[in-house]
Length: 374
Picture 1 (cartoon, rainbow, N blue to C red):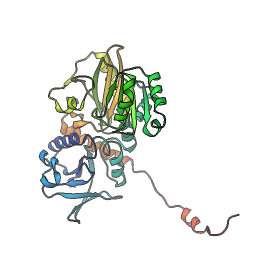
Picture 2: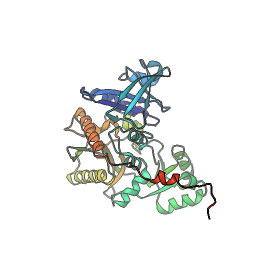
Picture 3: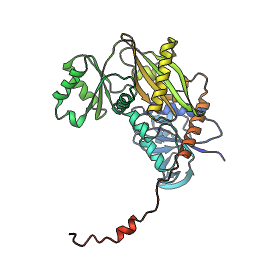
């Protein structure tokens, strides 16, 4: 019997559209041995499915352009989804696995993983804990610090604390870090909401701008003369497979959303020196193990050309296009198979005893809480 695979994508995220692209690529490459049920999460959080999910044009107005659109409900405690139309449930589907193509908030931060876990549905990608830590750049830095992995010096800001004494926190930033600085919302990706600050007089406005996207901000030292590299890692055949290395090409300043997704020819595999290649690959493996990752991840690195130092910049627990383009000797289809097999094996190994009968309720029944206690 063919396995029912949920392919989940979209979501309430600034990376919503990129998630759709990743899903469409995956749909075209997934093996026909699976019965794929595409689940589109609209920008308002509604779960939907339709018959023409591979038509990219429907995602401009899914409710109008989708054919036979149905609402989807996840069943808590059971590995099922329910399909609903006109306020009537028309079908229940037993789910064997969920393949996640969701990027950003609510899809890559552990929230979706937790929902699937509660429904006893195995899934691809990192688990709830590692997804949440990786998504939050401040928590990510804390783990890098504890594992003595290289990172850029930083100061973190929390909105509730910052607004009580703005000058104090700005002085703290200036005393610890020298200009220029780079400000990042803690839980966003694709270089959205980022600002580079060159002078103290601008920092208040830039902090206020970043707080429009998140209530936690990461402030780092900005290095103007850098080279950026990407490297991916996947758990395959009881071992870790490290990808080739990509040198990032960008128009100017930071690696922008437009550079990353909307321009042609910005990606190429870098033929860099062997020592740096080895260092990047070793660090990629260390990051995978340090954060307890699963599935495929992509690690983004910064190399300081002046000081000749390498730093871990960001980690993507569900990378765009599943980072298949970085694995030169691995077909996209085989990568998808690997993610499904690894997720199913992990789920099987995690079936621990989580509940048992005790005498607590029986003892509780015997206590009279209405009498006065001496």
